[in-house]
Amino acid sequence: MFEKQSWFIFALVGMISFACMALSLKKLTYDLPTSVILLYLFAFTTPAYLIYNVTTGTPLNINCTALLFLLLASVFAFIGNLCDVEALRLAPNAGYASAIKSGQIIVITLMAFLLFKDQRITLSGLIGVALIFAGVFLLSYQR
Image 1: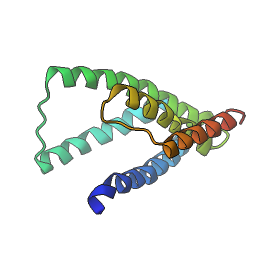
Image 2: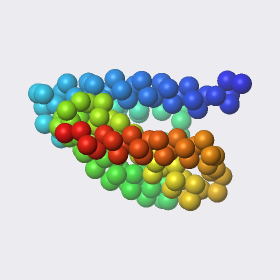
Image 3: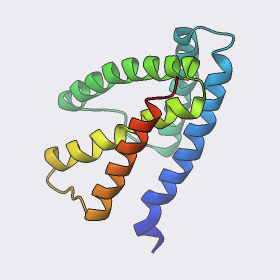
Protein backbone atom coordinates (compact mmCIF):
# COMPACT_ATOMS: atom_id res chain seq x y z
CA MET A 1 0.00 0.00 0.00
CA PHE A 2 2.71 2.50 0.99
CA GLU A 3 4.60 1.70 -2.21
CA LYS A 4 1.62 2.74 -4.34
CA GLN A 5 1.04 5.90 -2.29
CA SER A 6 4.69 6.98 -2.00
CA TRP A 7 4.32 9.47 -4.85
CA PHE A 8 1.52 11.13 -2.91
CA ILE A 9 3.56 11.35 0.31
CA PHE A 10 6.49 12.85 -1.58
CA ALA A 11 4.11 15.29 -3.28
CA LEU A 12 2.68 16.39 0.10
CA VAL A 13 6.15 16.90 1.59
CA GLY A 14 7.16 18.79 -1.55
CA MET A 15 4.02 20.94 -1.30
CA ILE A 16 4.78 21.89 2.29
CA SER A 17 8.46 22.48 1.51
CA PHE A 18 7.68 24.68 -1.50
CA ALA A 19 5.10 26.61 0.53
CA CYS A 20 7.70 27.31 3.21
CA MET A 21 10.24 28.23 0.53
CA ALA A 22 7.76 30.62 -1.16
CA LEU A 23 7.07 32.38 2.14
CA SER A 24 10.80 32.62 2.87
CA LEU A 25 11.45 34.00 -0.61
CA LYS A 26 8.62 36.53 -0.23
CA LYS A 27 10.22 37.74 3.01
CA LEU A 28 13.61 38.03 1.28
CA THR A 29 12.14 40.17 -1.53
CA TYR A 30 11.71 43.00 0.99
CA ASP A 31 15.48 43.21 1.38
CA LEU A 32 17.20 41.69 -1.67
CA PRO A 33 16.91 41.80 -5.46
CA THR A 34 15.43 38.71 -7.07
CA SER A 35 18.63 37.75 -8.90
CA VAL A 36 20.66 37.87 -5.67
CA ILE A 37 18.09 35.73 -3.86
CA LEU A 38 18.23 33.10 -6.59
CA LEU A 39 22.02 33.18 -6.82
CA TYR A 40 22.35 32.36 -3.13
CA LEU A 41 19.45 29.90 -3.15
CA PHE A 42 21.14 27.79 -5.82
CA ALA A 43 24.62 28.35 -4.36
CA PHE A 44 23.38 26.75 -1.13
CA THR A 45 21.33 23.96 -2.70
CA THR A 46 23.96 22.81 -5.21
CA PRO A 47 26.44 21.61 -2.55
CA ALA A 48 23.54 20.06 -0.62
CA TYR A 49 22.60 17.97 -3.67
CA LEU A 50 26.24 17.05 -4.25
CA ILE A 51 26.56 15.83 -0.66
CA TYR A 52 23.25 13.95 -0.92
CA ASN A 53 24.30 12.20 -4.14
CA VAL A 54 27.75 11.31 -2.84
CA THR A 55 26.45 9.97 0.49
CA THR A 56 23.73 7.89 -1.20
CA GLY A 57 26.22 6.52 -3.72
CA THR A 58 24.30 7.88 -6.71
CA PRO A 59 26.43 7.84 -9.88
CA LEU A 60 26.98 11.36 -11.21
CA ASN A 61 27.86 10.45 -14.80
CA ILE A 62 25.26 11.27 -17.48
CA ASN A 63 25.01 10.71 -21.23
CA CYS A 64 24.91 13.44 -23.89
CA THR A 65 21.14 13.22 -24.37
CA ALA A 66 20.55 13.67 -20.65
CA LEU A 67 23.00 16.59 -20.64
CA LEU A 68 21.06 18.29 -23.44
CA PHE A 69 17.77 17.85 -21.56
CA LEU A 70 19.42 19.19 -18.40
CA LEU A 71 20.60 22.25 -20.30
CA LEU A 72 17.10 22.77 -21.67
CA ALA A 73 15.59 22.31 -18.22
CA SER A 74 18.15 24.76 -16.82
CA VAL A 75 17.04 27.45 -19.26
CA PHE A 76 13.43 26.95 -18.19
CA ALA A 77 14.48 26.79 -14.52
CA PHE A 78 16.34 30.10 -14.84
CA ILE A 79 13.38 31.85 -16.47
CA GLY A 80 10.80 30.15 -14.26
CA ASN A 81 12.57 30.86 -10.98
CA LEU A 82 13.28 34.47 -11.92
CA CYS A 83 9.64 35.05 -12.84
CA ASP A 84 8.38 33.11 -9.81
CA VAL A 85 10.31 35.21 -7.29
CA GLU A 86 9.36 38.44 -9.09
CA ALA A 87 5.72 37.37 -8.98
CA LEU A 88 6.07 36.68 -5.24
CA ARG A 89 7.60 40.13 -4.80
CA LEU A 90 4.88 41.94 -6.74
CA ALA A 91 1.74 39.96 -5.87
CA PRO A 92 -0.72 41.40 -3.35
CA ASN A 93 -0.58 38.02 -1.58
CA ALA A 94 2.18 35.42 -1.96
CA GLY A 95 -0.49 32.73 -2.21
CA TYR A 96 -1.87 34.25 -5.40
CA ALA A 97 1.46 34.06 -7.18
CA SER A 98 2.06 30.51 -5.97
CA ALA A 99 -1.42 29.43 -7.03
CA ILE A 100 -0.90 30.81 -10.51
CA LYS A 101 2.45 29.03 -10.72
CA SER A 102 0.79 25.84 -9.57
CA GLY A 103 -1.37 26.11 -12.66
CA GLN A 104 1.63 24.56 -14.37
CA ILE A 105 -0.06 21.25 -13.68
CA ILE A 106 -2.53 22.07 -16.44
CA VAL A 107 0.30 22.24 -18.98
CA ILE A 108 2.17 19.30 -17.47
CA THR A 109 -0.89 17.05 -17.31
CA LEU A 110 -2.00 17.71 -20.88
CA MET A 111 1.47 17.70 -22.43
CA ALA A 112 2.54 14.55 -20.54
CA PHE A 113 -0.49 12.77 -21.96
CA LEU A 114 0.60 13.79 -25.47
CA LEU A 115 4.37 13.24 -25.06
CA PHE A 116 4.67 10.06 -22.98
CA LYS A 117 3.05 6.73 -23.90
CA ASP A 118 2.41 5.51 -20.35
CA GLN A 119 0.45 8.57 -19.18
CA ARG A 120 -3.30 8.52 -18.72
CA ILE A 121 -6.00 11.04 -17.88
CA THR A 122 -9.17 10.09 -16.04
CA LEU A 123 -12.46 11.96 -15.97
CA SER A 124 -11.80 13.08 -12.40
CA GLY A 125 -8.34 14.23 -13.51
CA LEU A 126 -9.84 16.28 -16.33
CA ILE A 127 -12.36 17.82 -13.94
CA GLY A 128 -9.53 18.65 -11.53
CA VAL A 129 -7.54 20.32 -14.29
CA ALA A 130 -10.64 22.31 -15.34
CA LEU A 131 -11.17 23.48 -11.76
CA ILE A 132 -7.53 24.53 -11.50
CA PHE A 133 -7.89 26.43 -14.76
CA ALA A 134 -10.97 28.17 -13.31
CA GLY A 135 -9.00 29.06 -10.18
CA VAL A 136 -6.10 30.48 -12.18
CA PHE A 137 -8.58 32.47 -14.25
CA LEU A 138 -10.23 33.91 -11.13
CA LEU A 139 -6.87 34.76 -9.56
CA SER A 140 -5.87 36.66 -12.70
CA TYR A 141 -8.30 39.38 -11.61
CA GLN A 142 -6.38 40.05 -8.38
CA ARG A 143 -4.50 43.32 -8.49
